[in-house]
Image 1 (cartoon, rainbow, N blue to C red):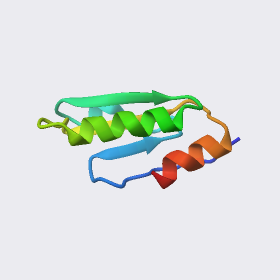
Image 2 (image 1 turned 60 degrees about the horizontal axis):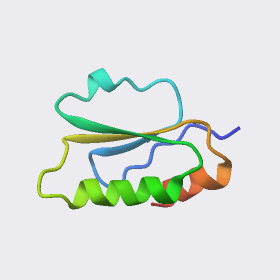
Image 3 (image 1 turned 30 degrees about the vertical axis):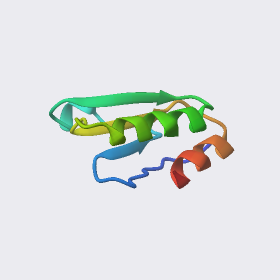
Length: 77
């Protein structure tokens, strides 16, 4: 089992690997990405969201108990 981790390469991007973060506290319009052993795809999606002319106020990446190597890939960005 992996431990809780928060990855914030951008101030409004957060990786959640626990059950203690509530989307309700983030406010505004945002994006929720769910990852399960698809870090490369999730990172491409993040790049797309951050590269657009209109960006969400927040992006929450929820890791759904991925393998440790996949979670490490997300954390490294």
